[in-house]
Amino acid sequence: MASLKEIAERAKVSLSTVSRVLNYDATLAVTEETKRRVFSAAEDVNYKKKSPKSKKGRIGVVTWFTQVQEVKNAYYLSLRVMIEDALSAANFTKSTFYYGESWSSIQECDAVIAVGHFSHKQREELKQINPKVVIVGENALRDGITSVVTDNEFSIESVLETFIDHGHDNIGIMVGNGRTSDDQEKIYDPRLGAFRRFLKSKQLYRSQNVFQGSVTPEKGYQMTARAFEKLNDEFPTALFVASDTLAVGVLRYLNEHHIPVPQRVAIVSFNDSATAAATVPALSSIRVYTDLMAQQGIGLMTQLLTAKEDLPAICLTVGTSVTYRESSD
Image 1 (tube, one colour):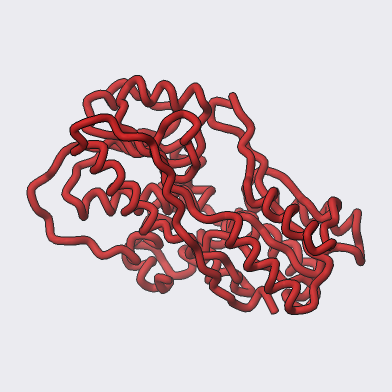
Image 2 (image 1 turned 60 degrees about the horizontal axis):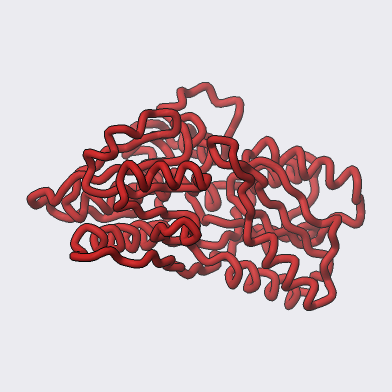
């Protein structure tokens, strides 16, 4: 992971500003542009750029977020930054399209890499504008689109096994329940399904231990507050949180109410973003290899560019690993 000093130097801000941005400090009075610069720098310092050569073509990078929304979700910001860095390293030029911006000029690009969750309608629109499209971040095979995703099922099973090995039998999960940006479809989190299946197989599943809400630090705080009010001593002793962003809010509530982590609640999060190492206590988190996802996405895109005939869509899954820190026992 990048050090706070490296991030501060690249983003041209103070160490204190970096720490507060990565911890989603709502009292920090800085612009959204400064926040984006900090998060981008946090990802960028981990990526080695190659020497420039002649450019191969122009690639459209489409993200499902607006610029303001993106800075609040480190995972998808990281994916976009890594894809753009990898495109530069592979000697492509790029044009970035945020949600709400016109997609019409995408047809002038040689290919498209889309980042995030898109409705069936949006996928069809992308394919009509430019059929050479790869989606990174969700499985789009049902719409005939080549995709790159991260492992969800086996990564969460590994964490649950560790919780159980450490004597936890009251285990919870906190996940996002968002919708696509056009509000056409609900986004289903496969980790919730894996959580239910695995704990049911161990006869440890408790429906009251499933907490769902939007993916923001504020919502993580609110869900934790409501859960403690309802469950009291029955609140889980181990909690899987589906995003470092959510986990920031969980930790904030626990710290404010003097609930010790991991002694009372062990926490493992997801993403292992720069935020995870900056929290107090530092978050154990499942590492998502966004750099490898980006590289594989560009590799699949290159196959579409060079193929002499139509290729069937494929979905490539990139594995994960767990970085254990202070928040879990």
